[in-house]
Image (cartoon, rainbow, N blue to C red; front, side):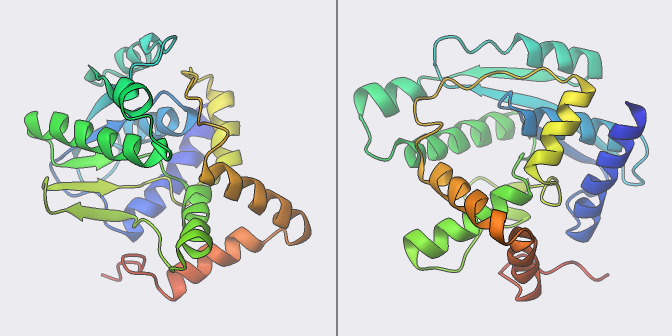
Length: 243
């Protein structure tokens, strides 16, 4: 298991170094939804800080949306074992999005409210850097969603500064594919909190995920080519640091 975590953390470090995501003395909050991506991100960053030349601190934070049956106890236990401070913030986001507003596009509003809640929570704690679990497949899917649904060539950035909140978002998993993350999380025995959201398998992102899966059966290296094009163009914010 140590070799597995070492290898995966090497992939995380490559992204961190390529985009200078971590600076000396950083306090970094990891947004932990309880899914495999964020749980493995937390484990990998905790492992990285043991030997990374720039010293940094970690905290973990979860936004409890209000769905019945979501138990964040496994996250709390993992953080206790890793000796990482943990905060679970209760919200009424589910009630607002699904019950009060009854949104046609609930994912967009839910995402905005989650971002606002987590940014407010970490800035109140004096933390200005937030690590998110978006990975390689998320980047390709976001690019395709922008292209097909909006007619734009766009994607989230590996590192993003938010003027309004003063928070810098980093995405250390951008070089890690979803299947690799699933395999490593399973091998490490990381606990997973299931997502009961009714939109989980019906969103536009899920449509694009299915489309890409179908296309990759005929063009197996298609995702790698799209990702490479994003870096070579480069999309704004995707040019690697050279110094």
